[in-house]
Length: 162
Image (cartoon, rainbow, N blue to C red; front, side, top):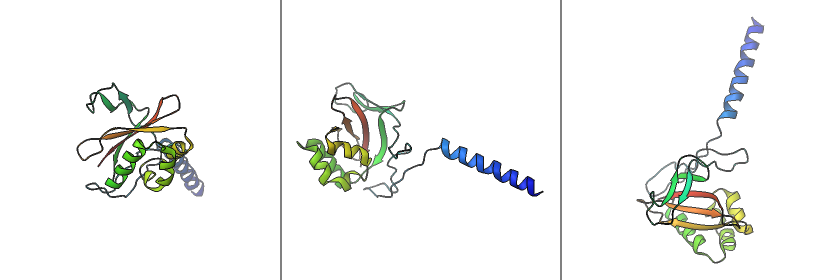
């Protein structure tokens, strides 16, 4: 009897460990925006804590969100679903418009990392990444914070909305 109990416990442990490896840890932030509570910042993270993209950025150069630019399936480089605060929106707009993005990001690190992975902000501070805001972050439209490397390649995009 004791042997059967130990065998069942071992099987349960193996199944639990296997399930945990298949499902990345969800990351939640309880920051309250103007109309949303328990705002989900990103759904899944990699083992290093970096958020996993859930859609793919596209930009055809026009000005209509969802038609000329935005994010769509499959998942490659766009993190969607973040509802943010007005204070954060101001910081993102100022960061995007700053002539010295690294310095701005460093002095506004705490507010920027409320909704952006700190490793991405660190790369802005070091000068490895530049950011540009595409669209307007409002309660009726999304803004997209596009991170580019030195070669102007898109590295990651965050989709934000009030």
